[in-house]
Length: 109
Image 1: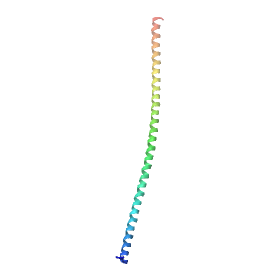
Image 2 (image 1 turned 180 degrees about the horizontal axis):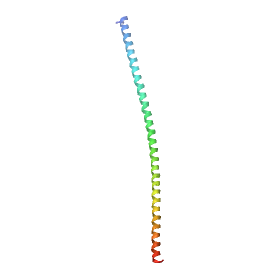
Image 3 (image 1 turned 120 degrees about the vertical axis):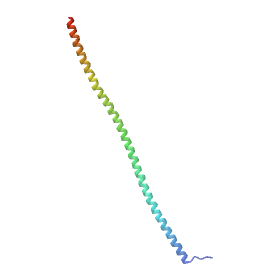
Image 4 (image 1 turned 135 degrees about the vertical axis):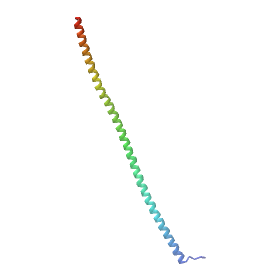
């Protein structure tokens, strides 16, 4: 061996390696924490996406129900108008019949 390592150099190397190992451990801890935060964020985003899908499905169902109710309301409104038109037609027919009866009575038929 041409250049033997002294005890002092060995101690310095060991101290350097220990400090480097400590730095790497701290870096690993920081990275692990960041990964945990990211995993939590991904979980929350996933939950939000699932909730959004459920909301979209519920809104689609609500739209279908609303369309059905709209059709039923139109039918109900149409019935009232139809009944009114029939009632007016009956009243008109009755008045016309009464007028014609009076005219025929005056003529003598």
